[in-house]
Length: 404
Ligand SMILES: Nc1ncnc2c1ncn2[C@@H]1O[C@H](COP(=O)(O)OP(=O)(O)OP(=O)(O)O)[C@@H](O)[C@H]1O
Ligand SMILES: CC(=O)N[C@H]1[C@@H]2OC[C@@H](O2)[C@@H](O)[C@@H]1O[C@H](C)C(=O)O
Image (tube, rainbow, N blue to C red; front, side, top):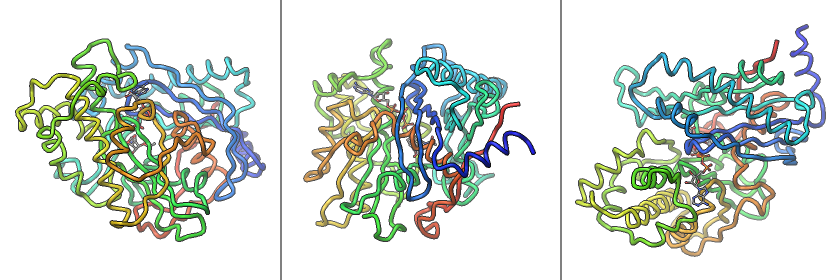
């Protein structure tokens, strides 16, 4: 028998596994690395986060990814080269983390690698008549290169199975959120404020699991970051929302931005920077006569847009007058008081807390979720949330690469 298959068989039967989750999100800020001890599987999964770090990308890495990121037309040669290059980069970044943490690669059971999304094309968003009705998504950072570069069996490319089973390839947070964070005490909304904003709705544990699902709600930080970069080259984002807090939202521009069918489309839905791009912003500015708006007012408006997108989606889940579920926030947006303030205004009466109070550090959550998916791929069963009603297919996800 292949030694890697024997190792997989052995680790699948063990009570616990040590899995490192890797996530490189749409903000291109760096690689999130979460070393997890996962005990059990399915509803019995228990998480102990041993270490977490975000390894920042330098300007050269960001420049290379931006050559293809969310672009309709790219050099096919460049894209082909970027795939193994990112796999090797992520392998080196992971090995550096393990060295710092004094963990031997041989003591890690699995790498769970999301890779870098470079294009997300849900059926409702792309305009390719040849592929009408087909959803697709592409993540780079090849798993074989990670396995070969680290010597650790690697699970990668999680989104393809979700697509193959009828989903949009995202959000995948549903599964891990459901397994780790359902509560019998309360209904929950787990709100992730990354480049895109998305949430998972969790009914009370023990109630009808078929109600659990995740959806994107629109932009999170992506347009804020793009505006800051355009007006203040050298700055990556609006630190602590200082610029946005100094501005006033422009109602005409906000109205033009919200006047997009994405915001009224039924849930669940996914999107990305392909739609919520500088071109979308420029069109709304032209329509509202706000092309010359100052940066502070522009950011104040974009913060309102992100919060309004979240609130509109929440209102599609929660019946009018019904109490709002408890909201737990994660992602880089938790560090932006302007965004949190806007959310408070758009969802009055909601109780907000960070996922940290649930034992999941907000910056580490997405990397942890991929470790959970890899744990299910090896030791679990397809997570059954109900017959695909909310496009949450009952599948295990990820492709397995072994070294050697
Ligand atoms: N101190 C801060 N003040 C304001 N904004 C911040 C701060 N720290 C992080 N952010 C925002 O968070 C972003 C990074 O968020 P995160 O790492 O969650 O995104 P991501 O995982 O790349 O996105 P996605 O979840 O869409 O894939 C930054 O680009 C910035 O906009
Ligand atoms: C295609 C893709 O990479 N989507 C990401 C992105 O970042 C946030 C949002 O858009 C979400 O849909 C998803 O990531 C999380 C981890 C998910 O799948 O749940």
